[in-house]
Length: 405
Image (tube, rainbow, N blue to C red):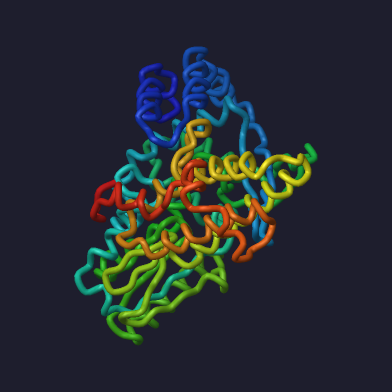
């Protein structure tokens, strides 16, 4: 039965709701909105419009500024009614998971970052290999729609109505920009819309299978790829194949995110670095977190001065904000920093560096300077304000890295 026909059955929506309810990635507020959406059968209007040939609405385009870097990200979105229809279609598309190779780890129920890292670091002789890591520039919005549609049609040959809907969405060149003006542009598979995750997996699936069939150590997570080889010659062959394949698909590589490693030197992937059995936070991830700590400290210091607030109040506010970012945020139900990294690493080296830097930021809020006088604010006092050491928290929750989710 076609997915669009299945969406008319309330039982399918209940299955989707139960999945979301059991997921660790959706907050209570969003779950309530979904419950109201399902109970009100708000999807019926969208399904009726599709059935009656009413054109699917234009997506809205947003340009997001990435904090701390001179870089912008373009994302697209639909209204609530259309968004949830696309979300449940994406959920049902997981039934097609068998078309993907085992070395693809993005947006799959039984895969993920932890499995991606484990698939590499658990190789007994991985330290003996050369590696090549790359990142595809603006992947989602650069996908050639004319090239992906025949592949999608092959996958959805028994779901013709669903295919036609996705085809209509992808071929429609119009979007609504941030000023509310309808413009025409090339937008690929549109980062931000629910179905783009499945399409991002599909577009390069032949590349994934190429390396799996040849038993090459390789992993892809959406637009991040890493490949390993026993010799420089073999690695060069892999590199040439990947770059040729991507060029053929109309994709380009981000030159600033190309990394090579030799045996017994560290390599990095998905925010993690590895060297001779030691799995730690990558230098890039460490730098990003320090930047967040620094920006927040400066913001709180300026707020303290402007409002003539006490050191205690400003420091407590800073510690609370960082604890939410690092450990848990009950208000936003987001994947916190430690929930992401703690299951992946087996050393506290980078955590110790972050602890040291966080204490510097806390003391900076008191003085506005980085001097020895900052140590007048005792460590015990900082702990009483609510400070939690990353190293201590890590060893409380330490578990061996395995292929579990």
